[in-house]
Length: 293
Image (tube, helix red, strand yellow):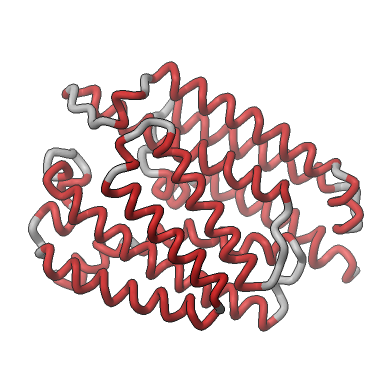
């Protein structure tokens, strides 16, 4: 039972967010190079351990509020299945492992890891209480993952990738806040950040970010720089998966109200999984396999 509680505490299902570290190498058509892939994997583990350390700190700080939440009350610290002292010990162990791997990958990667940790600590203790700033920091966290992946694999990050990553992360953050707002509205227990939102604002903000994301992706697909680098003008076919995927996520958020946890939505929604695999597969074909035939 103790091991199960520890497993729940470190939230390995949330490590899926750190797959963003593979994005720079994937789009540079270098992910299959052994050294690039191994460095990306080490970077993934580093950020996963650091992220889990952050999650534990967040759970310790938020335990009093989590006990009144319908889902979060079952978290190990909030429920009492693990003590705060045990949580601190696990957090220190994970943090040391994460930063040791970051140091092995080089000083730039380590600095990005430290920035990610520092921003999330500031988010946990203060900045998550300020509307718009909170979701912006979520977007910044995803950007840091991408830049960490670029440093680990020695691949440059394009302006398109930067913009698209931030926009997609904003959509995820806004959807998460919408789910939290709905839960809080049932008993009028709004925390400070949620007081700066309402459903109309969250819905419209998501639609704006989704619209700009689609336009930006289409501009990316038709960019001469990108088509020349990839060697194909058929990239726009991948936009069908992007558009359908964004529409599905909006449906899950606005119609079915199932995106308080974006990770859970991705792990359990077959529609999203098929669309995501279609997008990855179509891009992999253009980048890696098209010229083999």
